Length: 82
Image 1 (spheres, rainbow, N blue to C red):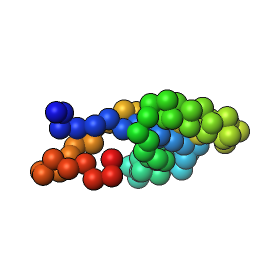
Image 2 (tube, rainbow, N blue to C red; image 1 turned 90 degrees about the vertical axis):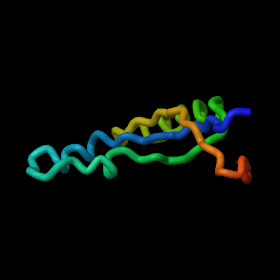
Image 3 (tube, rainbow, N blue to C red; image 1 turned 30 degrees about the vertical axis):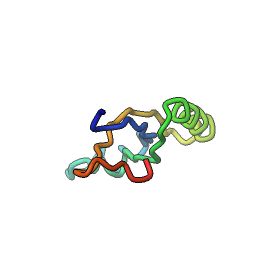
Image 4 (cartoon, helix red, strand yellow; image 1 turned 60 degrees about the vertical axis):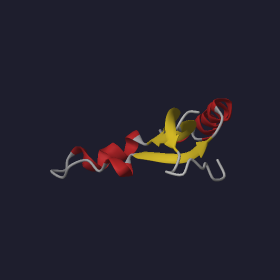
């Protein structure tokens, strides 16, 4: 049995917020620009959610995509509610 499961993280990127840092001597605070919106257990659900959010927020300049990630189980081999 594998020691991980795949999940799909819906991510938002806010390019307009980069303007905050454009003329600043401060380093870019990426946590203000990239946001993990939610974690889903199905790639199809993630794809649908990304499409929905991109349509819903198309006028705001943000972009949504999903990324597959691994969830490791605990030392006892239990997945809990996953």
